[in-house]
Length: 208
Ligand code: ADP
Ligand code: ADP
Image (cartoon, rainbow, N blue to C red):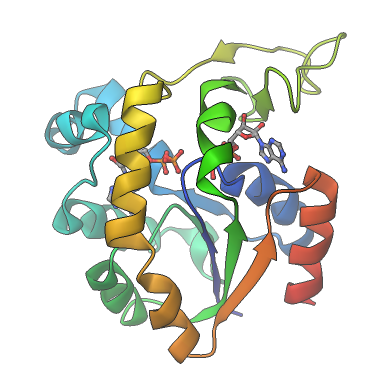
Protein backbone atom coordinates (compact mmCIF):
# COMPACT_ATOMS: atom_id res chain seq x y z
CA UNK A 1 0.00 0.00 0.00
CA UNK A 2 0.97 3.63 -0.27
CA UNK A 3 -0.48 7.10 -0.11
CA UNK A 4 -2.53 9.09 -2.60
CA UNK A 5 -2.32 12.83 -3.23
CA UNK A 6 -5.41 14.78 -4.27
CA UNK A 7 -4.15 17.76 -6.22
CA UNK A 8 -5.86 20.85 -7.60
CA UNK A 9 -6.64 24.53 -7.07
CA UNK A 10 -8.73 25.73 -4.11
CA UNK A 11 -12.33 24.72 -4.72
CA UNK A 12 -11.46 21.99 -7.25
CA UNK A 13 -13.43 19.45 -5.24
CA UNK A 14 -10.59 17.70 -3.39
CA UNK A 15 -12.48 17.47 -0.09
CA UNK A 16 -15.70 16.42 -1.83
CA UNK A 17 -13.94 13.61 -3.68
CA UNK A 18 -11.78 12.59 -0.70
CA UNK A 19 -14.94 11.73 1.25
CA UNK A 20 -16.19 9.52 -1.55
CA UNK A 21 -12.88 7.83 -2.36
CA UNK A 22 -12.31 7.10 1.32
CA UNK A 23 -15.29 4.73 1.25
CA UNK A 24 -13.52 2.68 -1.45
CA UNK A 25 -9.87 2.75 -0.39
CA UNK A 26 -10.25 2.94 3.38
CA UNK A 27 -7.36 5.40 3.46
CA UNK A 28 -7.93 8.24 5.93
CA UNK A 29 -8.12 11.78 4.54
CA UNK A 30 -5.30 14.04 5.72
CA UNK A 31 -6.19 17.66 4.99
CA UNK A 32 -3.55 20.17 6.05
CA UNK A 33 -6.19 22.91 5.76
CA UNK A 34 -8.43 21.09 8.28
CA UNK A 35 -5.47 20.45 10.58
CA UNK A 36 -4.47 24.12 10.46
CA UNK A 37 -8.04 25.31 11.13
CA UNK A 38 -8.20 22.99 14.14
CA UNK A 39 -4.88 24.42 15.39
CA UNK A 40 -6.13 28.01 14.94
CA UNK A 41 -9.33 27.19 16.82
CA UNK A 42 -7.41 25.53 19.65
CA UNK A 43 -4.98 28.46 19.83
CA UNK A 44 -1.87 26.25 19.63
CA UNK A 45 1.53 27.74 18.68
CA UNK A 46 1.09 26.30 15.15
CA UNK A 47 -2.34 27.92 14.93
CA UNK A 48 -1.02 31.28 16.08
CA UNK A 49 1.73 31.18 13.49
CA UNK A 50 -0.53 29.98 10.65
CA UNK A 51 -3.52 32.27 11.13
CA UNK A 52 -2.19 35.40 9.42
CA UNK A 53 -1.10 33.49 6.34
CA UNK A 54 -4.45 31.73 6.08
CA UNK A 55 -6.45 34.95 6.51
CA UNK A 56 -4.47 36.53 3.67
CA UNK A 57 -4.74 33.46 1.43
CA UNK A 58 -0.98 32.86 1.46
CA UNK A 59 0.74 29.53 1.98
CA UNK A 60 1.84 28.69 5.51
CA UNK A 61 5.65 28.12 5.71
CA UNK A 62 6.83 24.65 4.73
CA UNK A 63 8.46 23.93 8.10
CA UNK A 64 5.13 24.37 9.91
CA UNK A 65 3.30 22.10 7.47
CA UNK A 66 5.97 19.41 7.49
CA UNK A 67 6.02 19.22 11.28
CA UNK A 68 2.25 18.60 11.23
CA UNK A 69 2.55 15.91 8.56
CA UNK A 70 5.43 14.10 10.26
CA UNK A 71 3.32 13.73 13.40
CA UNK A 72 0.15 12.80 11.55
CA UNK A 73 1.59 9.95 9.52
CA UNK A 74 2.94 8.28 12.62
CA UNK A 75 -0.59 7.71 13.90
CA UNK A 76 -1.91 4.15 13.83
CA UNK A 77 -4.57 4.75 11.16
CA UNK A 78 -1.90 5.94 8.70
CA UNK A 79 0.14 2.74 8.65
CA UNK A 80 -1.23 1.57 5.27
CA UNK A 81 -1.05 5.04 3.74
CA UNK A 82 -3.30 8.08 3.67
CA UNK A 83 -5.07 10.33 1.18
CA UNK A 84 -3.46 13.76 1.25
CA UNK A 85 -5.83 16.64 0.49
CA UNK A 86 -4.22 20.04 -0.04
CA UNK A 87 -0.69 18.71 0.59
CA UNK A 88 1.96 18.96 -0.79
CA UNK A 89 1.62 22.50 -2.14
CA UNK A 90 5.27 23.35 -2.84
CA UNK A 91 8.20 21.44 -4.33
CA UNK A 92 10.08 21.39 -0.98
CA UNK A 93 6.97 19.85 0.62
CA UNK A 94 6.87 17.17 -2.10
CA UNK A 95 10.58 16.45 -1.71
CA UNK A 96 10.20 16.02 2.05
CA UNK A 97 7.15 13.81 1.56
CA UNK A 98 9.17 11.39 -0.60
CA UNK A 99 11.33 10.65 2.44
CA UNK A 100 8.30 9.97 4.66
CA UNK A 101 5.98 7.72 2.64
CA UNK A 102 5.46 6.10 -0.76
CA UNK A 103 3.14 7.97 -3.10
CA UNK A 104 1.33 5.69 -5.55
CA UNK A 105 -0.93 8.21 -7.35
CA UNK A 106 -1.31 11.95 -7.66
CA UNK A 107 -4.89 12.63 -8.77
CA UNK A 108 -5.24 16.09 -10.28
CA UNK A 109 -8.75 17.55 -10.39
CA UNK A 110 -8.62 20.18 -13.13
CA UNK A 111 -11.00 23.14 -12.93
CA UNK A 112 -10.59 26.40 -14.88
CA UNK A 113 -9.94 29.57 -12.87
CA UNK A 114 -13.22 31.18 -13.90
CA UNK A 115 -15.16 28.46 -12.01
CA UNK A 116 -13.22 28.77 -8.77
CA UNK A 117 -14.72 31.90 -7.23
CA UNK A 118 -18.32 30.70 -7.62
CA UNK A 119 -17.40 27.34 -6.16
CA UNK A 120 -15.60 28.75 -3.13
CA UNK A 121 -18.06 31.53 -2.35
CA UNK A 122 -21.02 29.08 -2.28
CA UNK A 123 -19.30 26.48 -0.10
CA UNK A 124 -20.58 25.26 3.25
CA UNK A 125 -19.68 22.17 5.23
CA UNK A 126 -21.37 20.17 7.96
CA UNK A 127 -19.51 20.68 11.22
CA UNK A 128 -20.87 17.37 12.47
CA UNK A 129 -19.78 14.96 9.69
CA UNK A 130 -17.59 17.03 7.36
CA UNK A 131 -19.84 16.68 4.28
CA UNK A 132 -19.18 19.44 1.71
CA UNK A 133 -22.10 21.34 0.16
CA UNK A 134 -22.62 24.16 -2.32
CA UNK A 135 -25.51 26.65 -2.27
CA UNK A 136 -26.25 26.04 -5.97
CA UNK A 137 -24.30 23.01 -7.20
CA UNK A 138 -24.70 20.60 -4.28
CA UNK A 139 -27.29 21.95 -1.83
CA UNK A 140 -28.02 20.46 1.57
CA UNK A 141 -30.94 17.99 1.05
CA UNK A 142 -34.38 19.32 2.03
CA UNK A 143 -34.52 16.79 4.86
CA UNK A 144 -31.05 17.78 6.10
CA UNK A 145 -27.56 16.35 6.03
CA UNK A 146 -27.23 12.55 5.78
CA UNK A 147 -25.62 12.52 9.25
CA UNK A 148 -28.93 13.76 10.68
CA UNK A 149 -27.40 16.66 12.57
CA UNK A 150 -26.43 19.38 10.07
CA UNK A 151 -24.31 22.12 11.58
CA UNK A 152 -23.57 24.68 8.90
CA UNK A 153 -20.01 25.96 8.80
CA UNK A 154 -18.59 28.59 6.44
CA UNK A 155 -14.91 29.46 6.26
CA UNK A 156 -13.75 33.02 6.95
CA UNK A 157 -11.30 32.76 4.03
CA UNK A 158 -14.02 31.74 1.54
CA UNK A 159 -14.51 35.30 0.27
CA UNK A 160 -13.71 36.70 -3.14
CA UNK A 161 -10.58 38.66 -2.16
CA UNK A 162 -8.87 35.81 -0.33
CA UNK A 163 -9.84 33.33 -3.04
CA UNK A 164 -8.02 35.38 -5.65
CA UNK A 165 -4.88 35.37 -3.47
CA UNK A 166 -5.20 31.61 -2.92
CA UNK A 167 -5.54 31.09 -6.66
CA UNK A 168 -2.45 33.22 -7.24
CA UNK A 169 -0.49 31.16 -4.70
CA UNK A 170 -1.71 28.00 -6.41
CA UNK A 171 -0.43 29.07 -9.83
CA UNK A 172 2.90 30.36 -8.55
CA UNK A 173 3.85 27.82 -5.91
CA UNK A 174 1.72 24.70 -6.34
CA UNK A 175 1.10 24.26 -10.08
CA UNK A 176 4.83 23.52 -10.75
CA UNK A 177 4.30 20.26 -8.82
CA UNK A 178 2.34 18.91 -11.81
CA UNK A 179 5.50 18.62 -13.92
CA UNK A 180 7.47 17.39 -10.89
CA UNK A 181 5.09 14.46 -10.30
CA UNK A 182 4.64 13.88 -14.04
CA UNK A 183 8.40 13.31 -14.38
CA UNK A 184 8.07 10.63 -11.72
CA UNK A 185 5.19 8.92 -13.55
CA UNK A 186 2.68 9.53 -10.78
CA UNK A 187 0.47 12.29 -12.21
CA UNK A 188 -3.10 11.60 -13.43
CA UNK A 189 -5.43 14.35 -14.68
CA UNK A 190 -9.22 14.25 -14.38
CA UNK A 191 -11.60 16.90 -15.75
CA UNK A 192 -13.12 18.45 -12.61
CA UNK A 193 -15.57 20.70 -14.45
CA UNK A 194 -18.30 18.05 -14.54
CA UNK A 195 -20.84 16.39 -12.26
CA UNK A 196 -19.43 15.21 -8.92
CA UNK A 197 -20.35 11.54 -9.64
CA UNK A 198 -18.60 11.50 -13.01
CA UNK A 199 -15.41 12.79 -11.42
CA UNK A 200 -15.57 10.16 -8.66
CA UNK A 201 -16.04 7.48 -11.30
CA UNK A 202 -12.93 8.57 -13.20
CA UNK A 203 -10.81 8.94 -10.05
CA UNK A 204 -11.71 5.41 -8.96
CA UNK A 205 -10.93 4.23 -12.48
CA UNK A 206 -7.39 5.59 -12.16
CA UNK A 207 -6.93 3.89 -8.80
CA UNK A 208 -8.18 0.46 -9.93
P1 ADP B 1 -11.42 21.78 -2.30
O1 ADP B 1 -11.33 20.77 -1.18
O2 ADP B 1 -10.62 21.38 -3.51
O3 ADP B 1 -11.14 23.18 -1.85
P2 ADP B 1 -14.33 21.32 -2.11
O4 ADP B 1 -14.49 19.83 -2.20
O5 ADP B 1 -14.47 21.93 -0.78
O6 ADP B 1 -12.93 21.76 -2.80
O7 ADP B 1 -15.37 21.98 -3.15
C1 ADP B 1 -15.49 23.40 -3.26
C2 ADP B 1 -16.95 23.77 -3.52
O8 ADP B 1 -17.34 23.32 -4.83
C3 ADP B 1 -17.92 23.10 -2.54
O9 ADP B 1 -18.97 24.01 -2.27
C4 ADP B 1 -18.43 21.88 -3.31
O10 ADP B 1 -19.75 21.51 -2.92
C5 ADP B 1 -18.42 22.38 -4.75
N1 ADP B 1 -18.11 21.33 -5.73
C6 ADP B 1 -17.27 20.27 -5.58
N2 ADP B 1 -17.23 19.52 -6.72
C7 ADP B 1 -18.07 20.13 -7.60
C8 ADP B 1 -18.45 19.84 -8.97
N3 ADP B 1 -17.97 18.78 -9.62
N4 ADP B 1 -19.32 20.69 -9.55
C9 ADP B 1 -19.81 21.78 -8.89
N5 ADP B 1 -19.48 22.10 -7.61
C10 ADP B 1 -18.62 21.29 -6.97
P1 ADP C 1 -8.46 25.26 -0.21
O1 ADP C 1 -7.95 24.01 -0.87
O2 ADP C 1 -9.92 25.38 -0.22
O3 ADP C 1 -7.75 26.47 -0.67
P2 ADP C 1 -7.31 24.46 2.38
O4 ADP C 1 -8.29 24.16 3.43
O5 ADP C 1 -6.57 23.33 1.74
O6 ADP C 1 -8.08 25.33 1.31
O7 ADP C 1 -6.22 25.48 2.92
C1 ADP C 1 -6.60 26.67 3.60
C2 ADP C 1 -5.35 27.50 3.88
O8 ADP C 1 -4.46 26.75 4.73
C3 ADP C 1 -4.52 27.84 2.65
O9 ADP C 1 -4.96 29.04 2.04
C4 ADP C 1 -3.11 28.00 3.27
O10 ADP C 1 -2.98 29.25 3.93
C5 ADP C 1 -3.10 26.92 4.34
N1 ADP C 1 -2.57 25.62 3.86
C6 ADP C 1 -3.24 24.45 3.78
N2 ADP C 1 -2.46 23.47 3.35
C7 ADP C 1 -1.23 24.01 3.13
C8 ADP C 1 0.02 23.51 2.66
N3 ADP C 1 0.16 22.21 2.31
N4 ADP C 1 1.06 24.38 2.57
C9 ADP C 1 0.93 25.68 2.92
N5 ADP C 1 -0.22 26.21 3.36
C10 ADP C 1 -1.30 25.40 3.47
